[in-house]
Image (cartoon, rainbow, N blue to C red; front, side, top):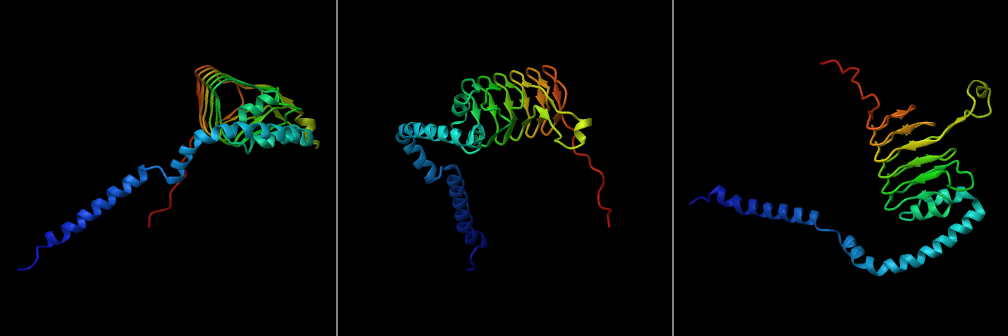
Amino acid sequence: MPANPRNATAPLALKRRRVDAYAVMERRRPSSLARTRSALAPVLRPARGALGGVSAFRRRARYFRDGIEGIAMELRTTTHDHAAILRAYGAAVGRDCSIYTPLHIVNADGDFSRLCIGDRVHLGADLLIDLADNVTIEDEATLSMRCSLITHIDVGPGPLRERRPREQAPVRIGRSAYLGAGATILHGVTVGELATVGAHALVNRNVPAGATVVSPLAVELGRPAAR
């Protein structure tokens, strides 16, 4: 009697279901490296505190050697000491802030005293802060990755300087404001409380409290002719 094709394929289908279920379990299961890290974290935490003292001494030595530019370089590589470093070199930083690497600070004049960050502020990765003038980021503001806060314009020593002299002015980000990824805030701008700035927007004037501003969206200019 010939074999039933359904009976022949049933074990294969069952095997596939088991393999698929196993794959889902593996994706949900933390990696062995992650499990090891979680297990060792309570043990390594005191060691990290001790190493923090060593790091602080090393940073002081770098400050004497390279000035505030050397400390700015530290902010581009550290993974968890941003708030402590900023406070140690003059910035006011509130409680429970999340600051991601790298953080780029430029044009600091000897220290970071022109920077004031409130409580529970989020600074995303690759953020640029220009401290040619004061920068204030109020409580619970969120600045997404690759945002830029620019406090000055200087075209350099060439002849263009006669038409465009240097300008600088402070930047303020209001309480609970949100800046989308890649937004640029120019000198003299205040982003109001609870305002929203869309991704990649270039902001050169004040944003009222609660307002939403966005950059132009992509526009389709045409399609290939149908063949």
